[in-house]
Each structure stands twice: as structure tokens, then as C-alpha cells.
Image 1 (cartoon, rainbow, N blue to C red):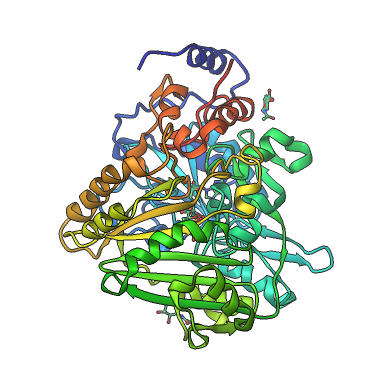
Image 2: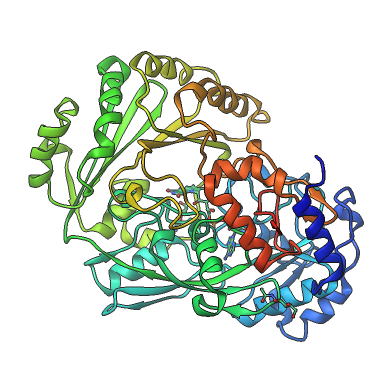
Length: 526
Ligand SMILES: Cc1cc2nc3c(=O)[nH]c(=O)nc-3n(C[C@H](O)[C@H](O)[C@H](O)COP(=O)(O)OP(=O)(O)OC[C@H]3O[C@@H](n4cnc5c(N)ncnc54)[C@H](O)[C@@H]3O)c2cc1C
Ligand SMILES: *[C@@H]1O[C@H](CO)[C@@H](O)[C@H](O)[C@H]1NC(C)=O
Ligand SMILES: *[C@@H]1O[C@H](CO)[C@@H](O)[C@H](O)[C@H]1NC(C)=O
């Protein structure tokens, strides 16, 4: 790709200006095994970080710490490009020292909170590269102010730990974020983050009111000292790009004493296609207290709902808005909100304590893609979709309706742009359990994605940043800076019109592109 004007300026700026990191000189083609020893980095770090928190490749704990939150088993492989060091900080000062020493001695850091990145970018590099990982799993306090209905949560906490702590303080408060309890706060909030409360309260990022972040200079900033562009960028502009977010202050939200959950299966033989056809028109315009999503798999559709109220109130609402689904009293499961948070992903027998379990039972190898739908998909296309779901290697389609709160927030209020006009999000999940090399499921997801093109959002075809997909494009690095033009290819899919502001903000806070990965925001210097 031709060197753009902004890039030329970025190069100039980084070569001649205040960029204080040693030239990070290993070319992308240098094998990680031939990495420099980085002794300077270690001797720098040892002044500020206790040795028990530093793990080199040959140290005893390295393997188990690296693997501890790898949530896509396909990256547990000898071929994976792994960090030369893992640092497990217990306080912000350790993170600051790591960044300062990394800059000084030419070693990049990637940051990992919950390790759920679909492409593993928090703990591996897709290309040969020398880097360290800051693993935040020892920083996961949740401090709640019940009176103000706010909380400070550290990035290393998993969502289940946040939900649990909030409900323990008061059962009348909750928080709108993802469905799976083991997801890390750090990566999730960075990319938006949504779950069963999205129609009532929007994304997790929409509900962040302050943050503590370590910038590329190793300085610890809060909302006031970072300024509003920086604070805007970290609430949905994707992880890794802008610094290491240590802690987030969030606005908690009211939840009623009882919520109602149902999970209703309908087969294609029992009219699932007509139901989905109706669902796509009804679900995005239901009252904000009701979220009905669909998981389509094989020849089945599961309609999964969370209603912020009792079964008694839900039944007449379903009867008037979506009678075809035939929801009955027996389908209702009433429970406190916090119980629903365990029930929905883990089933009837799950307990609230399971939200604290940090051992994941995810054993799957996976490939994931996403789409946004703005116009109802024709009925005959749903029939074809079900023939795709019957093919060899077929995965699951998870469809989350938007509308209500998530769609009424202005597109530029946070970097998450998927707002007004979106009917629903589709996540294509392909998985396998180690048999073969995953070629069939991976190919299925790419073929399915190609088939769907006419029926989903266009110009750009939108995708959700937290469902990371390197098929959408990867940054090209020229002269040690990721290029704006290469970033736009994938970046406008994740962020639409917000991409340019993200790149300008990146240029202000990290012009030398110290924090980067294959899909980090490139700096745009005008
Ligand atoms: C089983 C499963 C279920 C999921 N369910 C949902 C869901 O219901 N809703 C939804 O919205 N998404 C969901 N996701 C996607 C999830 O939101 C993203 O993968 C998210 O980025 C994970 O955050 P993490 O901290 O666990 O990941 P990590 O792998 O630790 O990080 C992801 C990215 O953020 C960066 N990052 C991590 N911590 C920080 C930090 N403190 N500061 C700056 N950058 C950081 C990393 O470097 C990496 O680039 C799911 C993923 C999985 C695997
Ligand atoms: C935590 O979850 C794992 C995986 O599902 C399970 O094997 C283990 O028994 C759970 N631990 C506790 C204490 O419940
Ligand atoms: C980082 O430090 C340099 C040199 O002191 C300074 O010019 C720059 O503004 C700082 N960056 C930020 C984001 O504060």
C-alpha cells in the first residue's frame, strides 16, 4: 500500500520528536526465537516490580499462567507466537513501570484481562514478534457505592465477579454487560460489551463514567486528566490501542425484585422459520423490559428471553405482540436478576456462586464472525439459512435484537456505532473439539458469511469489535507505525464513522504506536 501523507508525518514525528521508546527494531519477519535478550527491560523492571510477578519463558509458572485464560483452545499450540515475559501486576504502579521500561528498552506489551479475545490477540501475536504480556488476573477488585449506585471495577475482574458483588450489595441493582460470566471486564468494556440488558440500558461502555488508564508514557490518568477524547475512545474503541485500563467506574442500573426467563425450542418442522420471520419484525420494537434472542442451530431455534418483571405481566404482553410463539405459564422461570445471570448461560442448576468460578469449561476451538441486519430478511432466505445450518461443519447463529435504549443513543456518543436502524446482530459461531484441523467449520463460517452478504448491512458491512475477526483485515506496519489506510479496511466495519476520530485520538495519545496489535487503531496525524 502506498505511503499515505498521514503516515509520512507519523514517521517524521516518531523519528524526530518526543517519542522516547528505543527504536523497536526487530522487523516483523524476525523470528521470536531469535529475539533480543531484553536484559535491559528486566533490570529496569526489577526496580519496581517484585520478581515473583515476572515470568520469563523458562520460568516454572510461565506455561500455566499463559494458558490460564486462553479461551480459544486452537491457540494452545507450539506454533503460537507467545510472549517472552508475562507480568502479573498487583497494583497500578507495576503496570506503569512495565510500560515505562518497555518503552525505554524497546519491548512492546499486550494486555490481557479475561483472555476471551476470539483471535487470542491478548496473549499471542498473529505474526512473529517479540512482546510481553501484562496479565491483569490479580487485579480484580470491585468497590461498590450503593448510595450513589456506582462501582469501581478493576479490569482483571470477570463479569460474574462484578454481577455478584453488585447483587450482594443490593438486589435492586444490576449492570448491563455480556452473558458469559468468565469474560474479562478489561477487554469487554473496551469493545462495547452487551448482553440481555442491552435493550433497557445499552452497552457496558455506555455506562462507564470514569476510568484509570496507564498511557504510553506510563502515566496513570483519570477522566479529568485524560480529557474527553481519550475517555470517549476507551469506551468502545477496542482494547490495546490507547493504553492499559486499570479500573472503570460504572453507573449501576435498577433491576426489579423478580425477572422472568424463558428458553423455548422450536424445530423447523414445528414452524421455526415462520416464527423467526415474525421475530425479526417484533423483537426490536418490543418494550425495553423484554429481550428475546435466538440461537439457531441444526434444525432448531431457541427463543431465549429475559423480562424485567413477572410471568403474570409477561404472558399478556407475549399474547398481544408475539402470540405465535405460544408462551405459557409453564415456560416462565421467575427469579432474582442475579440468578438469571447464572441461569441463562449455565442452565437451571447453576447457582449464583458459579458466577465466581474462574475455571472455564470452554473446551472448544473456534472461529467467529458477525453481522448487523437493518432490513428484515425474506422468509425464503431463512429457509436457505437452515439448509446452511445443516451442512457439514455448520455452526450456530446467535441473534440479539437491538432497538430501545441501545439504538437511541447517538452513533457518536461512544465509538460503538451500531445504533439507530439496526434490527439485530448476528454472531456466527463455528467450533470443533480438536478433531481435524478445524478446516471444515472455519470454511463453513466464511461461506456462510459470503452467502449472507446481500441480506445484511452495507457500505460498510458492519461487524462488532468484540467479536474479533482477522478475516476483516489486519494492520500493515510501515516504518514501525500501523498505517491508517490498512486500519480503515477493518476499522470502518467495527466503528463506521467513528474510526477517524479514534485514529486522531490515537495520534494524540500514542503517536508512536507503542500499544498495538493486528487490529489496533492506527494513529492519524494530520
Ligand atoms: C465464551 C465467550 C462469550 C462471549 N459472550 C459475549 C457477550 O455475551 N457479549 C459480548 O459483547 N461479547 C461477548 N464475547 C466477546 C467478548 O466481549 C470479547 O472477547 C472481549 O474483548 C473479551 O474481553 P476479555 O478481557 O476477556 O479479553 P482479552 O482477550 O483479555 O482482551 C481482548 C482485547 O482487549 C485488550 N485488553 C484487555 N484488557 C485490557 C485493558 N485492561 N486495557 C486495554 N485493553 C485491554 C486485549 O489486549 C485484547 O486486544 C464473548 C466471548 C467469549 C469467548
Ligand atoms: C468451576 O467450573 C469448572 C468448569 O465448569 C468445574 O469443573 C468446577 O467444578 C467448578 N468449580 C466449582 C468450585 O464449582
Ligand atoms: C508523553 O511524554 C512526552 C514527552 O514528555 C510528551 O510530549 C507527551 O505529551 C506525553 N504524552 C501524553 C499522552 O501525555
